Image (cartoon, rainbow, N blue to C red):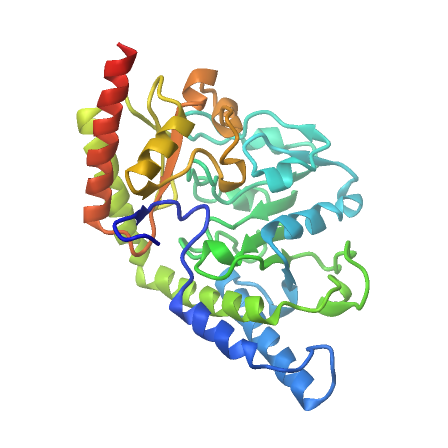
Length: 366
């Protein structure tokens, strides 16, 4: 990273943790194939099983329920592929990440409104649906106990954004059918994710071949990535236990207060609802989100407009449209997502720079 740059796009991806880097370097020296029965193979298998236990500890599930995949996107595809076991129809909510939304046989109505209020009645009818534990663009969280209401539903829960930031919101007896998560959102490496299978049946594989991952996902395991995932999961769980994200939430509030004081018409999406501690979705009327991203990048700040998989596409946010914002406002949003290394100086510098560029934009538009 260039000197003087400030990274504020942690919901897209996080810097690699020192614990993950060390585990990955150690795994690079493990020679064996984890499917081999000799000592070298067993040692490689041991690396995988240690990481599986670390991820299970973070999620609060059995080690046997963790299936390593190449990403949360692959985990989502594997989960949706089981829809015939869950009624044969999968419906995607308009506020879901594209990795789930693209598989929808239909689209349900808005999941939550501009105030962050949820509408669980719209999930009735027994459809197999995806319900995120946190929205990646806005940071909005379900109200306390909401996911427990869905315990009888056939649900895929996207926990990529809550994992490592808050406690995983699954109580015994109130769990979805499946959950998906990704290592690079918690300080692990890119290119490794997991499907958590809470059902009593193993998912039918969509990648067939050698029968790895207990015949649930074929392909030689990415030992280096898995080792990093496990180490990151353990460290991330410790951060949550220590309350480190409470400090990040304070910084997010300092940022929003600084912007609101000087830009009173600025909208902070979902700020009256429960949110992730690090996420601020900001709408500046008439100032396109993509333009804001480019201008702030030139000023030394990395932010995004929408989710990472949608960045670079000049269009209004589907999430904000589904929440009831108009096309102009939905196209004028940015997401600022802080990390554990973010400082008060960082957020105040960002606020100062953003406000200066906003004033210039207003002068040109006048």
